[in-house]
Image 1 (cartoon, rainbow, N blue to C red):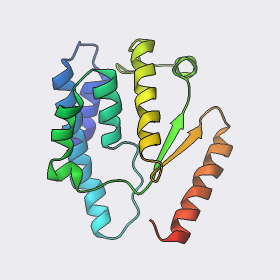
Image 2 (cartoon, rainbow, N blue to C red):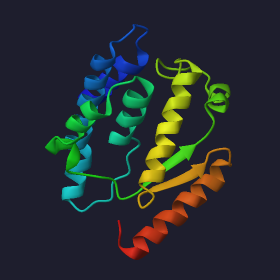
Image 3 (cartoon, helix red, strand yellow):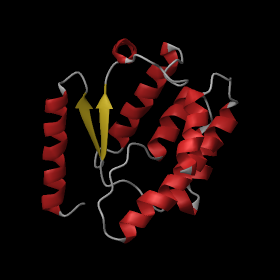
Length: 164
């Protein structure tokens, strides 16, 4: 798929990519993902689980790269991106230092300095605080089994309430 090829360019490259080039490549990947996977499945009334959405753009490009919020808001308000907000977002939170110890073969983003990752984490936590109705923050220091159970429990509650 086109989106996967774009992500390969972004993550597997050793080149220094301009912040706006990076932003537009990520948005192209998201647009492709929305058009081909998310929207197509939602139109069939399928439940969609996705690993990223516009929240990632806010965290990585605004907090991490320093792109102005006003610029991102202009892009977020494009019909393509404003049309769909997640019903629930699971934020698997962990200290960036701990993440560094877990990663064996870091990609271009994972190789960024620790301050970059701290800014990204803070942005995600800020998004969670501002959108408490949609975010579920999970301590990623827990075991995979505990995290899995927490997510299953939260999804079950949402299904029972008819949210998803």
